[in-house]
Length: 497
Image (cartoon, rainbow, N blue to C red; front, side, top):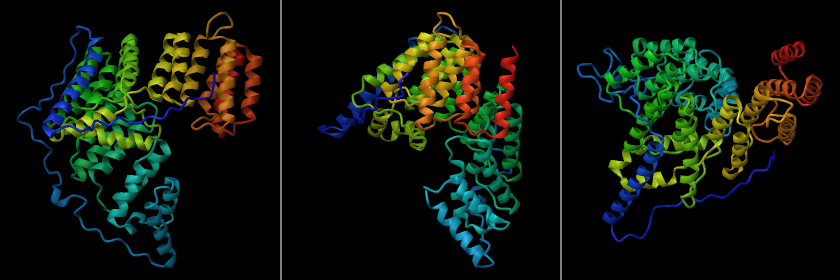
């Protein structure tokens, strides 16, 4: 398994051309959009099945108020409530405040460093900041590559400081708090859903801030992923009652929701509605379709979508690849969120957005498919084919791919003629260690990769080789005590068999 990946320069193709007049240009753009829409719709029609799905009525019920009573009006929103910052008592406090404000304006400053500067202020820390600096700090703390337990605690501690100082939060800050509660763990449980609903109740009932479409998207996503489908339907019904608009994130979230429920026809219906509503189909949307179809046990349909992604990308000269930087991906997502409105406002610009949206496979695409075939189907040849195609789209090495491979060897491994054999495992391990030694980005010796690698060697090769691999790991790994204890426990279990 080579660690060299082909990088191709991609240039987006513009729709602009020397057309005689705007009307001709507009007709050409609309014709182009129709062809694109038909191409994406055909992606769904190819594997459509005549099933009856659970339908969601997009028309809000009549006779219900658009929002709960007694919520704060715009005239008394957090942005309009006066706030006078506390003045530092001495030069030392002033210097600490100046360092924090300076760091907030420096995009290169790490969030850990900013938080340390913030905690250097005396209580009530947030009271020393202007309203604008508070907003900037919370916004920066909310924008992270992955929501983790430490990042959640960091954000919520600032929120608690603001509540203790009677400084109101706006709806985006409340919504970010809910998102941290629900997305800092690999799996959403009932406890996280209850915590998010508690924050939602506090926001609406106590602070008087009505939730918006983002708030309800977050709550719906959490309820669905926790398996609380009745609650998810109630959240959707409340969203309809308030006449909140259906947006791109709502539609994408419902595609995955139907996947969780095993409703392939619901996936297709929601996807078609997304396309026909003028939303831009990109890699993110198609990855969600693949994930939903895999959840619904429609593997061939998911693989067909993957094939169409490659086909449609190859048919567009100079088509861009998905961004490898998470910040760039986030900005593109923010742009696409409002793209559907351009159909009515500026069809020419909408056409340019469609043309510049990437539909090529990315790391998430391959992680979904490799994980499925490594763990569920056990089709070694399918995994090999996917790994061989990754360099064609400049998809880098990543620890999650190796994790899926080690799990595959552990679950399907044998010393006989299967593809999941000793020779293949040794090749994967050699590539993994080489990448770690070469300090490849986002590749390191993590607890779970080590555990599943040890299990894989115990299954495919034997205990002696497993202990040799552990020696290789110990030369490179500096674990925390709790991580080391978990690995030792797994090794004892393997050796006891």
